[in-house]
Length: 371
Ligand code: PMP
Image (cartoon, rainbow, N blue to C red; front, side, top):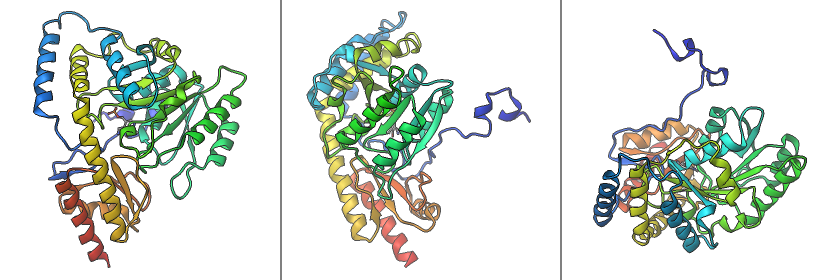
């Protein structure tokens, strides 16, 4: 039988595993930070209308520059993220994963390096590898905040071309303050002062769930700072595959060098535009989820669990001597959470109140069993 390693694949891909959160058919799925609420029927109807309109023109390629969509995304950010953003400052792609890939294709690549502060979103490292960008794992403190002094030292030593700051951070839920981002940004520029500097990517996939304001205003006057966002979480549209970035217009021009022509289908653009028309309703679900997230933190702590402060739609909890066994015990009760490989810790996504109750009951039973 021919296996991957018998093929002439790139050496750096040999022996590696693909991204693979389990997609198991269990009653309560709280493992991939999805929004538990299906889109409201009025929005489903509006999507059908807009997609029908787009279907009538499917013989033509989509708007390659996605102008209408970028304009609406800019309006959304201007309204919600505390900073005026123009169409020229926004770019959209198939999920923020594709945004990250385009950024690494443009600003990383062979002979270049990217740094992230782990544990963090594993795709930053994986997409780096996929684009031939070297990966550096920077440190966090025991409480999962970024160890700023150690981070500044790592940046000065390794002079990375790309710096990832995930806020709120997946899988820990930890938000990063503006001052930390600015210190990392300044250090990254100083370390590469002999070049045009380094790109700092603030991954705000969970930005809408934070107790803190968005870091988006920091792009003002900083051409090497990018904020990436997604409609997968707050807009409850993970199946849509729509991510976007806000940055200096020159960054948007730069990613045009690597984006595939017509990468964003007419159907995707039409669906995303329909969802943006329903922003207010969708943001009420975000408010409910924030409340549920805070309830999960409070109830887990009351049970005696250790819980990392969370600004996202998920909660990191522990600590377990054997986190994989704990993951399995919770799964045996019909609740799928995530084992991200952070020793001692698991992650649960905030679901509906009933799903969260099922999860909390499962943990309660697990603790009772092990005591
Ligand atoms: N960034 C972070 C921090 C994430 O957790 C995720 C999804 N889990 C993404 C980006 C990618 O999301 P999408 O491609 O669905 O926009």
